Image 1: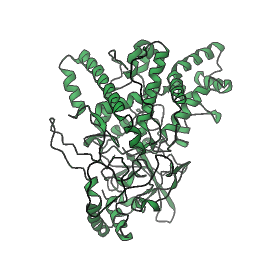
Image 2: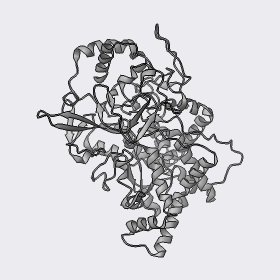
Image 3: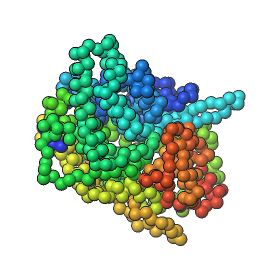
Image 4: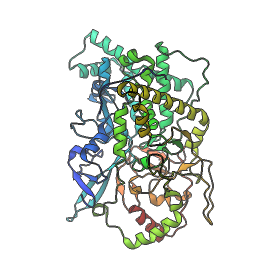
Length: 574
C-alpha cells in the first residue's frame, strides 16, 4: 500500500470455523466472551486485518486529538471507549495493523503528515460492513456459555450518525467550555497548557472544524430536520451530500473556491429514509450497487464514499491543494486492495456445532417452498461474459409494497442528484488519470482504470421495478423499487428489509399487520429459531415513524406454521 500523496489539481474450524485469539476483536457486549469465532469466509488473517484497519482515505479528526478528546459526560475519561459502549463499534486490540488499538472500522491515515498536518483517523469499509453476533447456550454441564462470532462483510450494528454527531458536538464544545478544553489540552500535551498552547490549539481546532460548522449551518438554515434511525441504519447519500456542501462552503468562506452564481440550485434532501447496511459478500459479483440507486462502476462508488464520508480535511493540506483538497483524501491504492480482498470473501455458513444441526427433512421441504415463493426474485441470474470475460449477475429491483420513503426521497430531484454523482465521478477519474500518467506514462491509465471498473460502465441512475408476475398472487405496491438481495448468508443479516424494519425472518413471513411495531435495536444477541437478533439496546425502532414502515413483502405469510419453519430451515443452509 502506498503512503505518499500524488495529486493533480482537480475541481470540486468447526465446520468451517476457527476460534481466534482476542487479536481479532472483543465483544461489544458487557458480558465476557470465551473467544471470537471466525467463520471461514476465505480470508487469511492478513486480509482480515487489511479489511478491518486499512484507511480508504476518510478524514474525521487528527489521531492525537481524537485520543485526547474527553468524554463530555465524564471529562476525566476519554471519548474513545464510547465507540464500543454507546455506538456499537467492535473493539479490537493493538496489532501491527492497528497500533493504537482502535475499534474495527476506524483506521489511521498517515499521508497528511506530508503537508505538515497530524495523522488523521477515519472510517473504512468494515465500520459499516462487519458484524459480531453473540449466542447463549448451555454446555454439557448445564452452565451458560456465550459464543461470539465474527461475520466479515456482514451488516454492522453501528450507529454512525449518532457517533459522528456526538464526536463533532464534543469537539465544538471545546471552544465554549473552558474546563472541558483544559482537560483536552492537558490530555494532548501531557501537561497543563500555557496561554500560548491554548491559543494555538484553539486556532487549529477552528480550522479543522470549519467544514462541520458550515455544514450544520446549511442544514439549520434550510430547516432540514435531522432524524435518527438507530444502529445499523444510515442515509449515506444524504449525509455525504451535506458533508460535501459543508466542505465546499468552508472553502468559499476561506476564499479558496469562488461561488458559482450561475450554478443550478442544489436540492437539499431530507434525512428520513435511512437504509440498512447491506452485506458485501456478493456486492462485487452483481452488476450494480446500492439498494435503489444504480451505481455500476465500483471505482467511483468507493471513491465517492471515501470523499463524502470525510466531513473535514487537514488544514495544511487545504492550504497547499486548495480546490484539489476536495478529492485529495481518496486513497486509490488502498481502496483497490480492499476491493480485491472483498472479491475473495465467501458467504458465512451456518455453524451447526454452535447453533445446532440442520433438519434435513425440513430443509428438503423448505427448498420446494423456496423455489415457489422466493427464487424468482432472489436468485440472481448470470449475465453473458463482458469484454473482460467477467460474469456478473443481474441485480433486479421490485416494487413489493415496502416503505417508499428512501426511494421517493432520492427520486425527488433524482435526475439532478444522479447527474451530480456522474459529474463528481468524472472529475475523480480525470484526476486519477493525471496521477497515473505522471507516475507510469501514457498507456497505463486507460488499462489501470479499465481493470478498476471490471468492465462496468460509469453510470448512475434510479432503479426501476422489474415487472413481477406470480400466478395467483396480488399485493399493494408502494411506488418504490428496491433491490432483491440474494439470500445466501441471510441468517447473519438481521434486521430485514431495506430499512431494517423487521427484526426476524419469522416476522418477515407474517402478514404486515401482525409484525411487531416497535423493538429495541443495537443488540447483537442471535436467536437461531426465529433467525434474527434479540430486541435490545438503547434505541427504540418505531415502524410507525416516517421511513421506518414494515409493510409490504407478504410473500409466504399464508404458509402454515410447519411450512414457515421448513422454509426458514432451508434458508439457514444457504
